[in-house]
Image 1 (tube, rainbow, N blue to C red):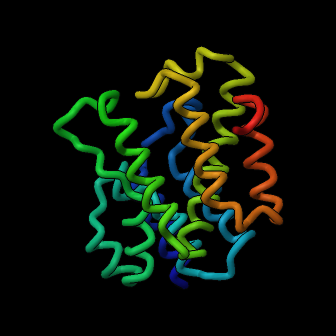
Image 2: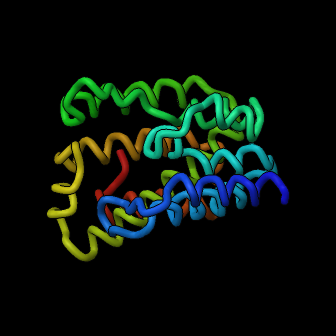
Image 3: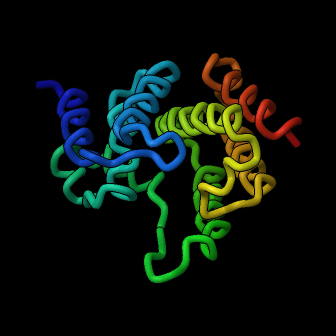
Length: 188
């Protein structure tokens, strides 16, 4: 079995029975979609594998050391770079802004195109889900999240777009920006 296939099987097992909070679809589908998107903007196999595994530490209790042993240091480094410090001892509503700011600071300071490809895959997949939810429920969508203010989500996703501008000539980036506009209005 090649490493990408192994990562898909590993993530499928890790997410077994888990669903996404808005659409209640199997969590693994988000990871696979993120990987497909990442593969459209990078040829780096490790970045695509990391996209498959990107939520396993944060949401499925997998350790970074296990990812490193099974998939290598580069994949573990990428997954670590997109895994938030959830601050389990605090209320997620209270830590949302600091968690997002930490993620943005790391992304802004990175020149790692593999990391940025993985981010684009993850965030475009998120935006697709948000758009479907927004079309169905309108502003009620935001009640499903720890952060209820759509302006905060707009800030977060627009700032990510700024950090990923090197991909502006790709279809994935164009779709990402288009979905931001459809949900939040003009970027800026």
